[in-house]
Length: 69
Image (cartoon, rainbow, N blue to C red; front, side, top):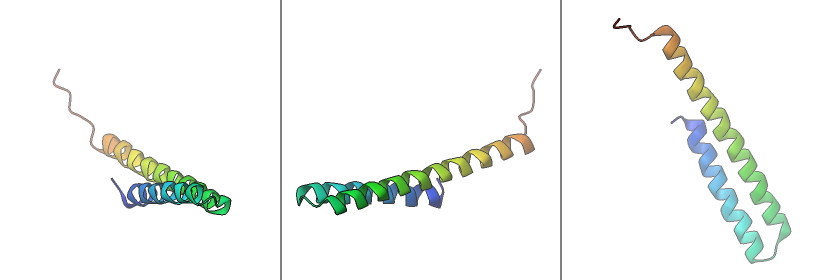
C-alpha cells in the first residue's frame, strides 16, 4: 500500500463523516463538501492503485518467473 492509497482512504472516510454531519445538522453545504472530499479521496486512492499496478507489472517484466519445464 502506498501513500496515495492511504491518503485517499483517509479523505474518503473524512468525507463520509462530513457528509453525515451535514445531514444531521441539515446543512447542504457541508453535505456537498463531504461528497466532494469523498470523490477526491476515491480519485487519489485510484491513482495509488494504478501506481501499485504499474510497479507490479514492471517487476513482472524485469523479473520473469523461471520455467521448470
